[in-house]
Image (cartoon, rainbow, N blue to C red; front, side, top):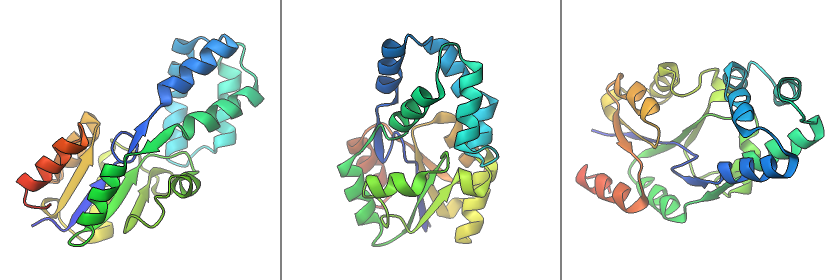
Length: 199
């Protein structure tokens, strides 16, 4: 019996526009996008997500690692990139309905500014619990973050449902017996929740 439902943020609760921002800045400043992607999503990025690097330290690292990039421009880029998300209102409605019968939590990787993003997106208070990689020291798809979630709610894997659009994250959760749904679109999510008799 499902007691807890975990939602990913970017790509599920929100629609992301990250690539648009990357292309915009690449064009405006003449940045090498392939090089920038490699540096952004390297080992240091995962240290940032786990709270082992501050955002300022990460930006300084990027400025030293990527050609022709000024720290001031990087700060603007990171800020715009981070906030390039729009709430899927239909998913918000699904969460509000689910909250009548289940504990609903957000489980997300973040760079240490999640509170402000949730305020901006008007998502603060929507979830019963927020599990933030930057605070707990584990980031998806590390299985430890899912162990943390189960312990937090005092449930077994079979009592938990996890909704994400990332295959690696879903696979990690499944290893703990967590039921998973791969998010494709809102209608498909409603259909799968109904098939599980949760909606």
